[in-house]
Length: 345
Ligand SMILES: *[C@@H]1O[C@H](CO)[C@@H](O)[C@H](O)[C@H]1NC(C)=O
Ligand SMILES: *[C@@H]1O[C@H](CO)[C@@H](O)[C@H](O)[C@H]1NC(C)=O
Ligand SMILES: *[C@@H]1O[C@H](CO)[C@@H](O)[C@H](O)[C@H]1NC(C)=O
Ligand SMILES: *[C@@H]1O[C@H](CO)[C@@H](O)[C@H](O)[C@H]1NC(C)=O
Ligand SMILES: *[C@@H]1O[C@H](CO)[C@@H](O)[C@H](O)[C@H]1NC(C)=O
Image (cartoon, rainbow, N blue to C red):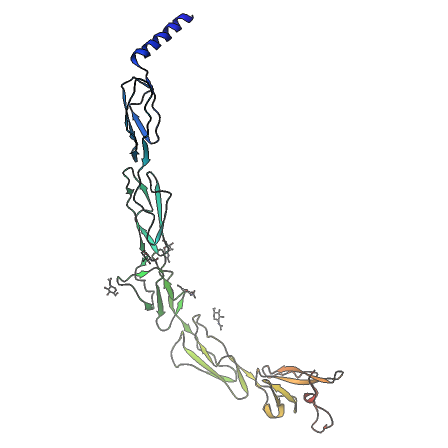
């Protein structure tokens, strides 16, 4: 059983001795291929390394011949990726990249207010060129804005080509009798369109009604419109509760509804009070009564502590409540000290 194997082995050795040793499969080189690629080569056989597409060779030879020793010579060839031109800067934008080598892809984005003109990514090709071509960031522009019905532009400064840059503004004004609903100012957005347009609507107000004990004046017209005004007044001894002038609002009602309120007759004949921060006497200051809304402070005595304090009273539409602590002295009760002459608590 042993013999045939031995014979076979020794004949193999003889063969090698005469012919030289065979070379093994050549070393693998990153990003390169070998032609022809076999598991063994007879002495004298040639192999050629070539870098894969996208890789260039550096150092060392590319052709090797299997020597009689059966050992491939040391190979110092290297295949290194092609490098595409520098593309790390994009005006008004940013580039995301690791390296600019084959086969990497880099991507682009623009700053707010700019948009990409071109592709948002590029690949470094086998030829060492970017594909597709590098993009640029162009400023965002908006076309001239549409004008809402019943409106006109009051502020708009377009560029030379009639367009506006990102952030540009236009302001609308409604025609007379029309009120604006929405924002009268529109802005050129980063998408190259304008923010929502406002609406202008015709607004009418009803004729204002005359207040009891007073009067109202308004323009002698068939119809009262947005921003028309009316003025109110009251008859003697009545005071206006609300503004003197009202305006037709965008909601079709008046900005306020003033009323005429009655003045108060004071049930007190004599008293020193505080009115608008000053000491006054009722008999001088309010001999014709108090108007609606006016407020005074009465002096009261704290008997235990022998000091004075004040309490407020306000005329509300003909009624005033005198503080309970207030005591009116007869003009003849000269021996009594009025609360207003007692030191404050
Ligand atoms: C856009 O890029 C240009 C060129 O680098 C620069 O002059 C300009 O200031 C940039 N604009 C903005 C808004 O960043
Ligand atoms: C800009 O707009 C004005 C008025 O609408 C028009 O007369 C002018 O031709 C426009 N210019 C351009 C460059 O479109
Ligand atoms: C209207 O829009 C402008 C910008 O377009 C903004 O600054 C302003 O606050 C807006 N006004 C209102 C009342 O929303
Ligand atoms: C502007 O364009 C953006 C993106 O196309 C869209 O989402 C937005 O609704 C548009 N705005 C207006 C006011 O039309
Ligand atoms: C006018 O109408 C609007 C909307 O209905 C309402 O909010 C407002 O309070 C009204 N104003 C007055 C003074 O009544």
